[in-house]
Length: 165
Image 1 (cartoon, rainbow, N blue to C red):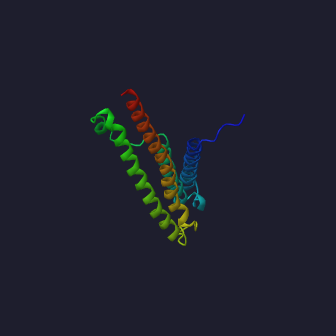
Image 2 (image 1 turned 120 degrees about the horizontal axis):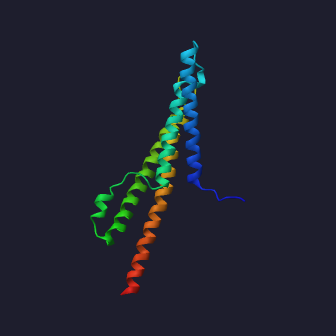
Image 3 (image 1 turned 180 degrees about the vertical axis):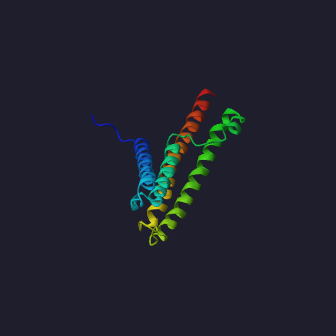
């Protein structure tokens, strides 16, 4: 039976593969330094850095998808119940605007750095810098979904209040 594709599951699996790859590359690097004169060029710190940067950005997207980023719930809980949803909408709107703005800047950065390469492996810097753009776009997707959900909740509450009165 075919299961429905879920972006969050794909991101978690990708993060898992990145962690495994990072551990294996670091193991080869340590093992080669201990027992051989040279380390394989592909196990250098450039590849580890590339994997780590991608892992951080994919991990941030997973946290956005699960809505587990650190937040200031304590302050929001001090407001009356009727204001909490409105505050959520404002917060999610600001987050979405911030992510989209930074995403555009990061894409311009990645595109302008596409001609530069890493020192040992000649990997284009584009592949390192685009990871931040990808992370921002995926986080934007999840925060737009949360914003829409908050707006729908507010409309649902206001409709309930109108029908009660």
